[in-house]
Amino acid sequence: MFGLWKYFRRRHLQRKPVPDHWIDGVTEYLPIFPYFSQPEASRFLAHLKILMWEKLWIGAKGFDLDEHTRLIIASQGARMARGLPLSVFDKLSEFVIYEEDFVHPEDELPGPVFGEAHPFGTVILSWPAVLQGVRFPCMGCNTVLHELAHILDLSSGYFDGTPILHRGRDYTVWGVVFQKYYDAMRERPEESFLDLYGAADESEFFAVATEAFFDLPDIFADEAPDLFGEMRRYFRIDPQIIPCHCESHEPPEDGEYEEVGRPFLMTRDPLDNPFF
Ligand SMILES: [Zn+2]
Image (cartoon, rainbow, N blue to C red; front, top):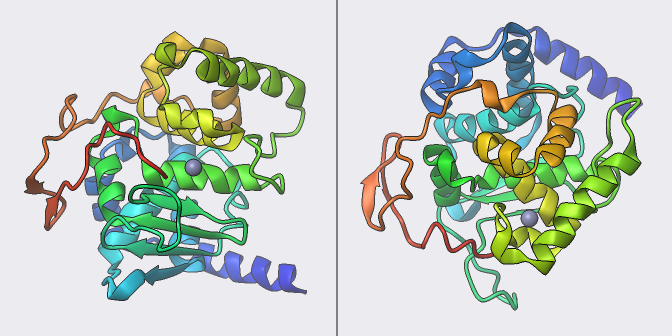
């Protein structure tokens, strides 16, 4: 019964036109959008509607979660899902956004948290971390992609680094290739081109690989062509055909700089890769 209601609701929402100002916003916040093929653009917008209209958006501690903020985050999710079925984020129920990096009161982790994905469908994000990933994709550190990769991973029922693969895909090949690079990262971290946070477990490895797949595709394809191939077959897009749109190839300096519409204070070393 619930599934039927959801089906009709989604069909109703998908028939509603995309608001014109969304297109302006997406073009501004996601400058690679005009490079999407027609099928990719159309599926991107369908995912954007799902994320914007079907998910619950909560501003933590009174954070004013306006449409501008939601659109920036949803654009990243739709970007990563533009080759995937519309059901891929069905296990995601809500976003909770903090205006600053947050710290768990009883957490043993010694630093701020940039984001979390929970098995009950909640994704928590730090707004500064979101902006950093959006503005400096060449860093390969995108918290929205990371946490939503965990949601894709959860499609199989577990955070185990393996989402549900498409019909006909070979889980053995996926497992062998991922295991090879995961083991290599743990044994020889100094040689890894991926964020070493991926060495924490298989789920984190898939999440950091997803960040690099979208934001550092040329490096990824050179360093790990077989892993890149598995990711490309899973996401059903080729991120290498889109030119780099970094504002700078260098990481941002500490200090204040302008983000989209408001001043943004960097509060941490963006290359430090703390806990998220
Ligand atoms: Zn993670």
